[in-house]
Amino acid sequence: MANGNHAAKALKDDRRIAPREKFQPIQVRDLTSLDHKTQVARIAYIMDASVTGFLLHVERKDLVPKEYRDALALTPIEGDRVILMIDPLNLEIAGKIARTRRLNKEMYEICVDFSADAPEYWRAALIDMLPRSHDFTE
Image (cartoon, rainbow, N blue to C red; front, top):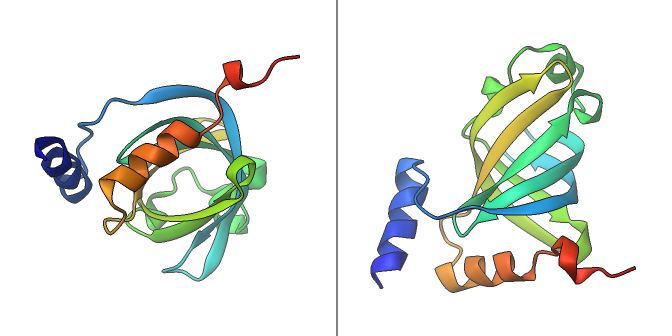
């Protein structure tokens, strides 16, 4: 139960406590702000994840509103409640944008925390279900 308290604290305080697991980029689509009622990005990629949330990389060309493509920062969407579709799992998931950062001229980083009402066991199961490179053999 102590771990559950730590995860809940991480969600409340926007502090990262849970260890992140790296993945081969996992495509997600339709990152949509529920607060602004607009699609933020057509496509993004999960780069790493933990039981509290995940880190997305979004290319400038995949941002939908022109003002986001032209902006140097995505700070207007920080704190927004969002939904997105994880294609390999055919799963729509909700969360909150904890922070954003511009990595370079063409790439942004968006950190999404899972919805506070998502139980810890469900968040842990989701991380276990995300595809890893060793799941695919040629």
